[in-house]
Image (cartoon, rainbow, N blue to C red; front, top):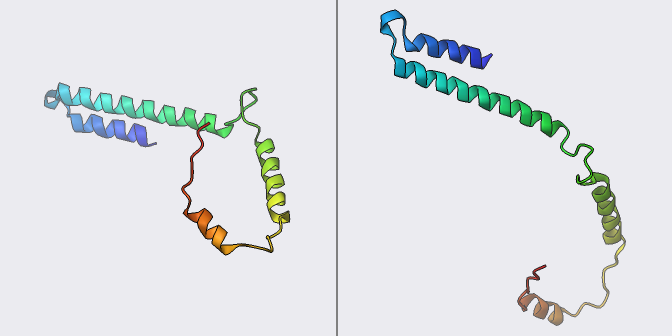
Length: 103
């Protein structure tokens, strides 16, 4: 609804009969064309986003990541807190610089 109304408004603002200006008409036509291309592009992008993973072989398996997350969460929840914690050693570990591993 917006694009046709915008095109009509631009047509009226360009002028009537002898009152027309060719450069304003060309500029308004270009703006309407760019907006139409943008709207069609948004619609096509929305169609692709409806099914982002599709049935392609190279797509990620979402269920694999979900099941892996559940298993890792269970392992974290099943872990026990250490009883003998050496606070001096913990402080020393916090002060040592971290080394970033590059894969």
